[in-house]
Length: 433
Image (cartoon, rainbow, N blue to C red; front, side, top):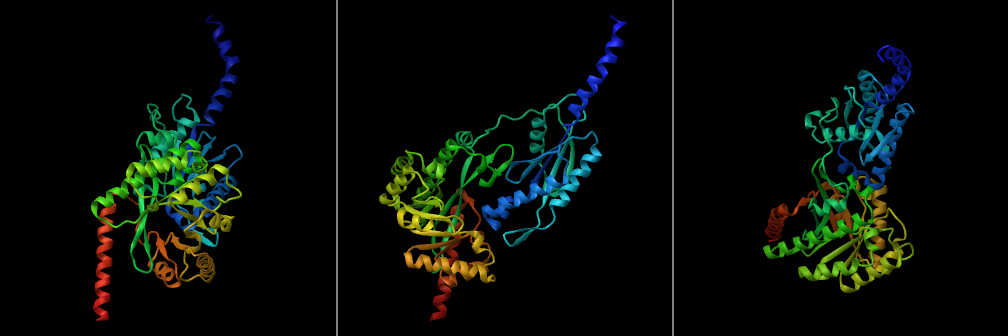
């Protein structure tokens, strides 16, 4: 046996080199994270943000070899498997990708300069590591990056003791684990300054990745996820209304987005009625926001029936992201829409951009003819707020008023906002006298 060992080893060496070479090709994993995803989505709109991701992905693809594919693991998260044995070469590639992607990009007439943070994982040991484990480890390390390291590329050796944590992989599982929380953003009247209500927005308190906004998880959701998410946000929104009522705050309504998938569920309207009845909330205080593309022609019969039943019961219907879809006029007349939400893409820089102003004025003229209210969303500056009020927009929502906040912070906001409005009223009264 001993005499045969060298001979067998000589035969096996080419195969061993081939196998080790195959393993080593996947030994470096790069994860790049686009920073300020929520702010970019607010600024560019959902369609503009999606276009930005495509442009970044194309820049990366052009800078890499065909054997180093780029994947978008989540909105704003890019992964690359670098088939090289050299950590120096891998870092050079990572920095080249980062530098190329951080050049200014024009999206829908706006110029943004992306900032990317990277984690490069090297397999310095002899053992083979599955590529998805390396990427999973990289994403875990990414969630631990401190503010001082934002915009940098860090080389980290793979931890062989690391095991993927048992974490919810779907929104339905996250709902069951109690990780989905409604954040609330106020909506105010431009004429009186009165607080008209809040929009309930979903946040995922992810155990490994921190608090995630919808752009980080919406893309991978299935029908079960949409149903679970809608019911959870509805339940929390109505509970918040009861809480504000008990505290004596005047909050007329709460709004929430309803996806086409949830709307097409045959039991959706019954679920809403049951929750309203259980929490003793009048249907007129619930606002359901529908996408502009949910029209009488391109929606299914179950969706149309659900909308009709909810509208007849007194629930208010908003047309969300107005001007970015299609079939809006048919939807407004057929579904009894009471308010249209002017999309952020038309609101940005509206106080100085004549093209934006013409578009908003056209929407206002349409709304006036149809006898429905308007709300501008994504209002980020006091200048935008003032201009929108001057040209006749009924209500506004956005960072210029307040960022979305957990329910525990809403009472503090309401108290401060109403005190400020009272002070303004007193000042105007003194000036008038």
